[in-house]
Image (cartoon, rainbow, N blue to C red; front, side, top):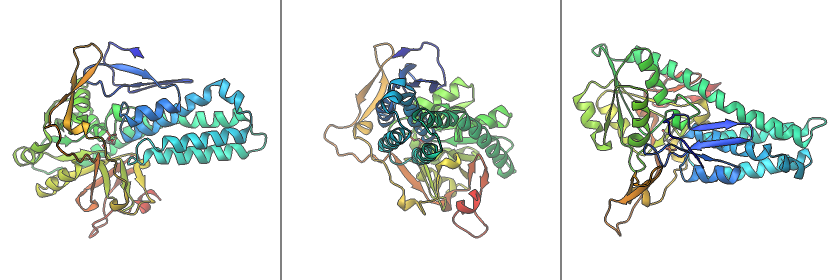
Length: 378
Ligand SMILES: CSC[C@H]1O[C@H](OP(=O)(O)O)[C@H](O)[C@@H]1O
């Protein structure tokens, strides 16, 4: 473990052969980076949510295998192109079992698997050439994600400014969960739009929800907003409708873990009720995600697998520990109570105003209740 004293919003640190992730279980109480030495570590830090957020999960999974492949000992052991290909395939299959809902992990695994299969069949392919092809592609994901996020920010800002009510001189937004630098390679998706609105002088105020049970809002998004000096206020999840009734909120902007072909969107639990209240209050409801979050093979939201997590996340709450660089949990529910803890819900396309990606903004065709994402991506 590498201890850090200065706060940082860099959640993934990579250089060839070395990967470190910021342990998000300890934020905002301590900034501690943990080494990810290979696929076993990668799977564990994703499953335990030391790293989380759909794009970050995919990147850390891919880089954990890059680190393992970089080990010359391994390429020495697996001396042929087909043996490396089989090794990569089995490791990617294993990484896919870490968390089920965010499709970015499955998209990255499928793409890298195909790339390695092709690299293994070219003339004169060697173990080293196949390993290098994988490593180069995994490394490219870091830069591509940051570029995509900046484009999402730009397109999202344009959309909000074009569609905000004439009566609102200033933009005020509400966001849910954490979709910022901590959930991506950097900048963020929904939080990237909020950053862009702020950087371009168009944001009057941002509100973020606590996001129970895991508190990505109060622990992570609030931390990022404070760090960036963005004028912001934290609310409890059950205050959202009151906020929309009392304040001139321009838009609710959220991320996505998986967007079905018709636009139904799986995102952090609580997103669905925010979309309902947005429609009731005639507030824009915007989903922001890279195109890798769009799953054209899943027709609608009813086919999206929803992760259910452990009861401890609901009956306990995380706080600072007396011990430096640590956090602890406190029981907040009556012992013995039953718990249901779905990590995500599905917001129907009909409640979503626009889906903002790095390729542009997808809206519904006039008279339609759903999006045509196949057409949008073609
Ligand atoms: C840009 S990240 C998308 C997504 O990831 C979060 O889930 P989790 O913290 O459980 O990994 C949340 O649903 C965000 O909107």
